[in-house]
Amino acid sequence: MMDLGPHAIFIIWAYVGVVVAVFALICAVRIDARRVARRLAALEAQGLRRRSDAP
Amino acid sequence: MSIDSKSRQGWFSRIAHPGQFAAWTQPLLWPLVGITTVLFGVGLYFAFFNSPQDYQMGETVRIMYVHVPNAWLSQFVYVIMAVSALGTLVWRHPLADVSMKAAAPLGAVFTALALYTGALWGRPTWGTFWEWDGRMTSTLVLLLIYLGIIALWRAFDDQLRAARVIAVFTLVGAVNIPIIKFSVDWWSTLHQPASVFRAGGPTMPPSILIPLFLMFFAFTFLFLVLHLKAMHTEIRRRRAMGLERRAAGALA
Image 1 (cartoon, rainbow over the protein chains, first blue to last red):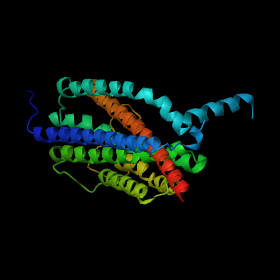
Image 2 (image 1 turned 90 degrees about the horizontal axis):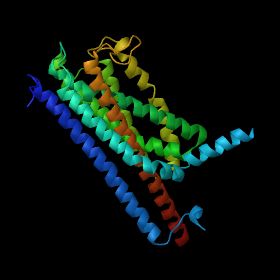
Image 3 (image 1 turned 90 degrees about the vertical axis):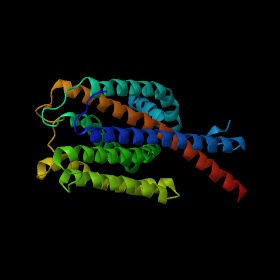
Image 4 (image 1 turned 45 degrees about the vertical axis):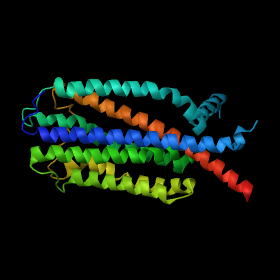
């Protein structure tokens, strides 16, 4: 274990905070993407299509 | 207009069409995730195991490897939003609206992290978590601007109308970016002046600059990945909203 000196607690909390926030941000982006993909799939399953998708 | 410029415009319009943009950028996502992961792995190794302590700050210099990239991104993301706002107002391009909306929450998180890591770095270095000086206060104002923009996006049902209003708000808020940048020169502050991106070159030795740049690129690639993914989601959300409107119109 490396010695982070007398202010180790500040260094550790800085990195822990960044890791938690970045992880939460990645999860939020992925969860939002999945929710929207499900919503779009449900609409398309009802046979709804955009005019530009029409053959 | 020449035939050449017409074909160039056609090519640009094609790749910037939201649906086409999502299609050609989708295969880029996983390679970008790979590059980001490698950069973080190598950057963290250098930050903790292959860089010296600072002669003044000691080991707390390691907080810089997460503070500076987040501070850089807090401003860079806003510049991306301001350029997108111009795209919305001048060219009324739907991809510009999408980019602006997708970037705001990311910018807010990076700004909050810049303030958080700055406070934790400030306590052992200056003896205080917070001081109402130019750099810190203007960065806090930036966070409030981001939060205001996110609230505005949620306040409007009509996203096209929202984009015009928010684009104006974003461009007005952009005046804060040079204030943040030059605050350390204009006012007497606790925060040190620029030591990496400055006219005379960086003031740091390579042993500290290398991990700093690795982490800087790691966070920048993280933003690129998340921004792309959030843009894809926003394009799909708008498609879903369009289909819901069509369905509602058919029922009426």
